Image: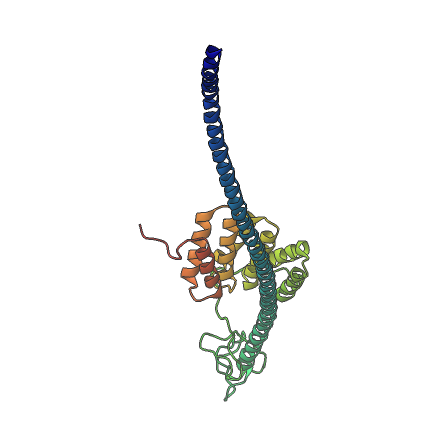
Length: 338
C-alpha cells in the first residue's frame, strides 16, 4: 500500500516531463511563425506604400504629359496658322510680282511698237527729205545765171558755145557736184552715207517694217504664238538689217522658252546678242539665255552668261536679277581667278 503511493507521484513527474518535452518545440515553432507573419505584413505594408507612391507619381507624370501634349498641339496650330499666312502672303506677293512683271512687259512691248512706228516715220521722212534735196539741187542747176551764161554744173547742149547765149534755150540739168549743198531750210537726213553691208531691199509688195512688226507684237501679246512666230519670221526675212528684226528674234526666243524648247530659245537669244549688239533687248536676252542654259542643266554655261550680263550691263535691272539668281544658287558674282 505504501509502495503504491510512492510510485504515483513519480509517474506524475514523468508525465509532466514528457509533456514539457513535447510542448517545447511547439512553442518555438509558434514564435517563428509569428515573426514570419510580422515580416510578411511589414513587406506587404511596404509594397502597398510603394504602390501608392508609384500611383501618385504616375498621376503627376500623366498630368505633365497631358499638359505637354496640349502645349504641342497649340504650338502646332500656331505654326500651321503662321505657315498658312506666310503661304498666302507669298502667293499674294508672287501674284503682284507677276502682275507687275506682266505690266512692265506690256509697257516694253508697247514702247517697242511705238519705236517701230517712229522708225517707219523716220524712214519715210528721210525719203521725203531726199526727194526735197534732189528737187532743190535740180532747181539750183536750172536757175539762169546773170549774163545768160550756162549755170555751173549744167550740161552744155551740143552745138552751143559754153558761156554764150545760144538761140535754143534747151538745157539739160546735171546732178549737183560734191560742193553743192542743200538749202538751209532743208535738214540733213538722220543717216547719211551708204552702209558697209547694206541689207537687201524688201520686195515692192512687202508691207512696211512697222506694220509687220506691230501685227506680230499684237498677236504675241494675245498669246497667238503660232501666228506671231510666222509674222516675226516675216520681219526677219524682209528686214534683216532693221533693229526690229532683233526684237523679233527676242520674242521668238521667248515663245520657245515658254514652250520648253530651251535649245531653240538659246539660238534666238544668241541672234539678238551677236547680230544686234546695239539692240535694247540685248541685256534681257543675256538674262533669259542664262536661264535657258540652266534649264538645260548647263550650270557652267548659265553662270557664265549671267556673269557676262553683269560685266556688260552692270547697272541694268537685268544685272540685278542675275546677281540675285547667282546668290540664290550660292555662286559668287565674279569668277574666281585661278
